Image (cartoon, rainbow, N blue to C red):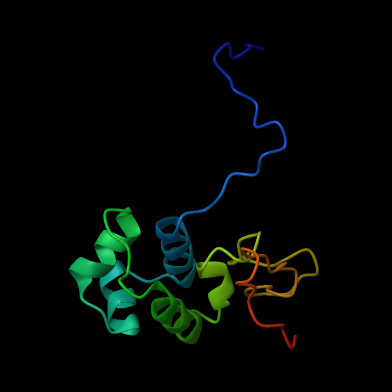
Length: 120
């Protein structure tokens, strides 16, 4: 068993997901190509591709988060970084249920910008 010498422990810090990573995760879990997702979101392929690669961000990220929610069912709060864990997709969860399990998401946000209370 080898020991890594250049490992920096996170020491309690939880890595954050970027908007690009969140968009890519959901698109892949839905089984769509970038072109199909851009069509679903009603945006150009070049723009969507730039968002997913992290080269650019949507001009109105809140509006795009709403569209992602409409298309995927994943809460806009997760796309905006207000939820602290990613949706689980594909296969079954611990309870043998298929599809996305969203009830476990804890909503967090900057003080004064909390997302609306969930009715779930």
